[in-house]
Length: 304
Image 1 (tube, rainbow, N blue to C red):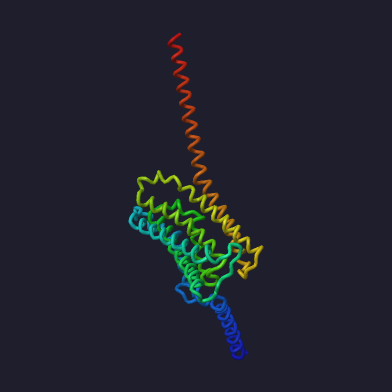
Image 2 (cartoon, one colour):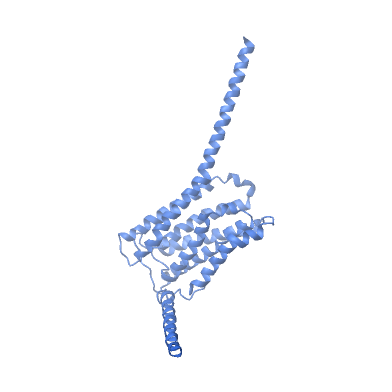
């Protein structure tokens, strides 16, 4: 009986394994865009997922333990170079998105993905791919925080943002490199031009950082981009242009989640400080008035 059941178990195992292989091949090959499926880091989700897992392990475990008994690294030259490259890259992505698509051929209402091999379609697909690589490069933001012992800046919002964006842009590159969804990338690239310009100036001229008064408006700009992304994506509920409506299941909740996370960050980082400063200023004014009134009363007593 045992000998007779062995072939049956092997046959079931082969069927199971073959089904998994076929499913994997169907999801990560057959459904993908044939133009981008063989590009670096795109064929399989494993390399990208490995980078994200390694990133989280460094940030949450190995990095802090490594830096525990070490002085923070300054990294000034590296930060200046890194932020300068991010400004250039963000500017290029913003320009490509407008010039190759949104200011020329794309509809602001609803735009399908052009899967052809035309120069324009390939240009947009290449832009989506570079955007994905840019999201991977931005993981260095958090690594620099750890090496400089700036753990207070590594919030849940920061980690969630830097984890979700590479995965989302990988999926866009593999399955939908173009069309309606690229609007989010264009707006995000514009925000990053402003943001990394601030970081560049702060790293280049740290003694003048207190004069960079527009830091808090970067957060407002980031909140605005999620509002635009939400409204622009909602048009898929009204218009039909063969762009997948199911993408709204991912886009809309994340847009709202990001908005409220950034709003909470803004409230904690800036409104609290503003209220605290006003409170201190009010206390100082009350003390000054008491002192002034005391001096006046003392003066009257002397003249009486």
